[in-house]
Length: 104
Image (cartoon, rainbow, N blue to C red; front, side, top):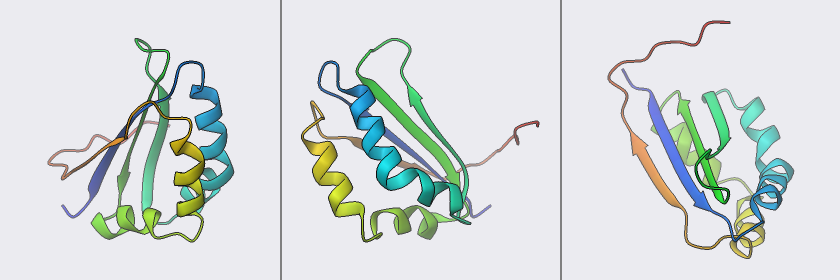
């Protein structure tokens, strides 16, 4: 199985979580939606922390995950979100050993 999973945990400054999402939508949402390498993607609000964002997804391979940070808009995305975040984001990569596909 060559698929690769990614997990990003972000902590927005108090009251800025929706603004972080707005920046993500401005730069990343359309790219993710049209990416052949992104098999599934979830942008989530943590139910237990009003400032936490959890983004996770499954990519066709590790290279597909790396392509995200190589996009020409990525530096602008980082610059805009940096002012809204309370701490640096945590990025994790994982190699799936079992996948249950979502039912439609």
